[in-house]
Image (cartoon, rainbow, N blue to C red; front, side, top):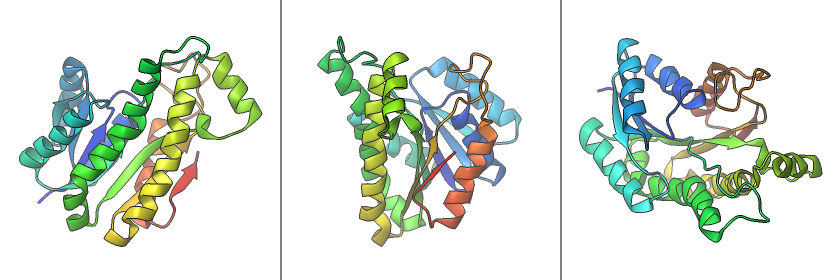
Amino acid sequence: MAETIVVCGYGVGISDAVARRFGKEGYRVAAVARNADRLAGAVDKLSKAGIEAKAFPCDLGDSDAVRKLVSDVGASFGPIKVLHWNAFSGAAGDLKTASTADLRNVLDVTVNGLIAATQAALPTLKATGGAVLVTGGGFAFYDPSVDAAATQWGAAGLAIGKAAQHKTVGLLSKALNGDGVYVGEVVVTGIVKGTAFDSGNATLEASTIADKFWELFKARDTVSVTI
């Protein structure tokens, strides 16, 4: 029976490349995002590439909806082997004006949703010796130049979310290691070609990042790598 990867925060770029990389290895892909129409188009392209895939529209900032998502994927595709968390929020860009609701949204998408999905999928992840893979971001790191860039680019909320997520990955890794569940992240410190952030100066290929996720998943000996 084919194994299943759930790609949360599906879109062009890293998530699509991860779906294709794991699909190449025979994985079924559960593609998750809020926009049902875009998901349908993505699934159609994956299917034409010979990858078994299905769309699961979901608000990944709603923990209850995330738990139901995990149940729905299990009912459709069977046990989840890999959970890939690629979701992020661009809210609360300017801390001088950001509302508490926007800040809450950032953490709901980047941290609370991730934890809810991991908890809901944990029984099958333990049974399959599965993994939780997270797309991290360089804004997570404390450095004056990083903080200056995040402030200048209106990405304060994204930086806060990625910093909290980076710590969450480390904590989940320690918590789940004894259960045979691998947790790891690829921290992306540049702009990925073909994404909404690419204004013509992107340097990173999404396929390179997807290959790194596959390497981490197979080796299972490093929690975090930076690319």
